[in-house]
Image 1 (spheres, rainbow over the protein chains, first blue to last red):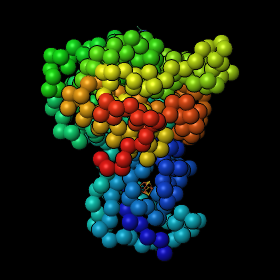
Image 2 (image 1 turned 90 degrees about the vertical axis):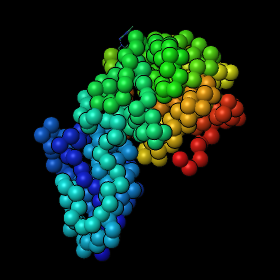
Image 3 (image 1 turned 180 degrees about the horizontal axis):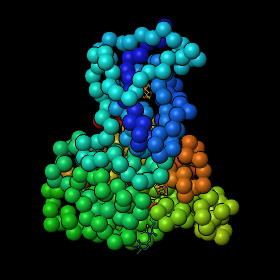
Image 4 (image 1 turned 45 degrees about the vertical axis):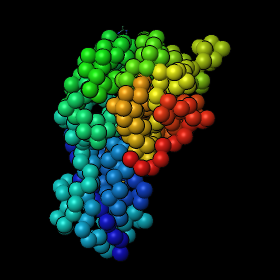
Length: 83
Length: 273
Ligand SMILES: Cc1ncc(C[n+]2csc(CCOP(=O)(O)OP(=O)(O)O)c2C)c(N)n1
Ligand code: SF4
Ligand code: SF4
Ligand code: SF4
Ligand SMILES: [Mg+2]
């Protein structure tokens, strides 16, 4: 089981695909998705295990992240970032 | 198989929002700066510091000429557009007329260190209570990525394709090393937005610089190292590492002067904000 203490909303429509958020995420739960938005930029996706730390928000030049902390951590059956 | 978490809308489970898309003093998230540019990250540190200090309604920014000038269209702050390099002088006049107002400049390395170097030196030496924010990417970004006075030895720019060569191009100017020792300088620090911790530290530096100004201590400056992957001809994802290792090795980050006291060497600001 993987636990998420937090989560993010990603404004994928304005993402420019720079990938700065990927290494910035301490638990490594962001990765590039292979999906592209209307401007042709590849956008990130979120795996289970987000801590809500907000590092992605601080490094995104295009203001794509909104951060949430769960009242009760959410559990997921999958393997999260490890897979 | 790994779980992909939905991120196109707020979570359904009970949760507290702890981070907004953009600072409250921003009108929009929409800007035309390149993918991976460091300047919008620096903007965040400035806008959030203004709000932290409760100065949103009593603040004027004086803006230089460079890529960051385009960010003025999304800043919800009173602004004056200066001529290239002249922002410290416009800031001086503004502060003298409105001493209660928080006055800051937003300038690039080309703007501050090339086009108007004497302006900032005299403003610092006079001890004007204004805060200059220098966004240093080592290039004239907006006009195509040419070498500036802060470009480090070995750095590739449009007119130093094999890297800056001291014998041919001269040596870079360390702006904080130049301005910190001046008697009128109360606070001088250099941050870098190459990672999240760097952005957070930079924000504390900007806040301290503003606090020094509001106390009337004298001149304050925060240089912020920013990525310019376009000007450096590198992939966006390599920008932060290049900034930290190539530029950061010469333009060392940390606090150089605090409360008018020159520190022996650059010191990181304490964690407290
Ligand atoms: C007096 C004058 N000279 C030259 C220019 C052309 N110019 C516009 S932006 C710029 C480069 C600015 O570089 P920098 O301040 O480092 O900002 P960056 O674009 O790198 O963020 C130059 C030279 C101008 N606008 N005015
Ligand atoms: S909030 Fe932290 S853990 Fe969650 S995606 Fe962003 S950087 Fe990763
Ligand atoms: S940092 Fe922002 S713009 Fe860059 S890839 Fe991540 S979400 Fe997209
Ligand atoms: S040229 Fe450089 S400084 Fe200008 S917007 Fe692009 S990345 Fe940013
Ligand atoms: Mg520049």
